[in-house]
Image 1: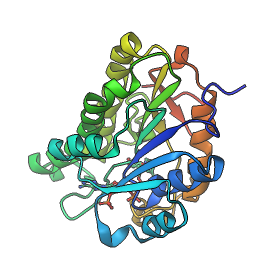
Image 2: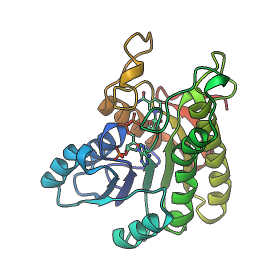
Image 3: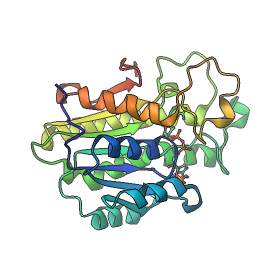
Image 4: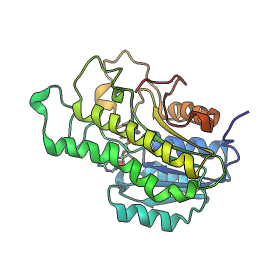
Length: 252
Ligand SMILES: NC(=O)c1ccc[n+]([C@@H]2O[C@H](COP(=O)([O-])OP(=O)(O)OC[C@H]3O[C@@H](n4cnc5c(N)ncnc54)[C@H](OP(=O)(O)O)[C@@H]3O)[C@@H](O)[C@H]2O)c1
């Protein structure tokens, strides 16, 4: 029996759902639970066409343009969504390469402002969401708070080096997840807080890095399905874990 019955939960909030894995979560959750009160955020309008199309088919999907690095926008999201008790919140925001950063190959490429950007986007948003949505987890209902991390953020698993900012910012995210899980245990004893490695997934984030990879490649909807299967089978005793798409635990 699943701990969180995703086909029956009342609501879910996917942060960073304009495309990629976040969008796939919205699609897969709505397939499982067409009546759910589904909330989803995007930042760049020009990339969110598929989310806008999904909204046309589901009147129960509410979408919000939010840039969660701005705390006022997170507060506004909380107010506008009117969520009181939440069952599922997944933060899918992350960057590997953008106009500001590209993954460092060596110490020569270390740059303070670029490191700050990695930490801002990949680490800080999750505790900010936890801060403002914590009261929606309060009580005895079953719930899950998750962030999409990355296996390369595992300190134990790092044998290749490189990608300083991305690796370190995901390792910091993992520490935030442990902390959040400890704090949530007190007020939300039936919550499960997880850092999840999605597996290598064909998205905008990975497209420049997967041409010659030997890693198994997943489509975003396969990834979302894999992760939802993990979430539904976790119980509160397993809170504060770093889990891989294939259900294995990753060492920190
Ligand atoms: N794809 C993979 O193989 C892989 C592997 C390991 C971990 N991950 C993790 O999976 C998560 C989802 O990534 P994805 O693969 O689905 O990539 P994606 O399609 O590129 O999605 C990235 C998300 O992050 C948001 N984002 C990026 N830069 C941002 C910024 N500066 N400020 C605010 N939001 C920003 C994007 O929002 P907008 O586009 O709306 O701005 C989008 O919602 C990320 O945390 C990533 O690190 C992915």
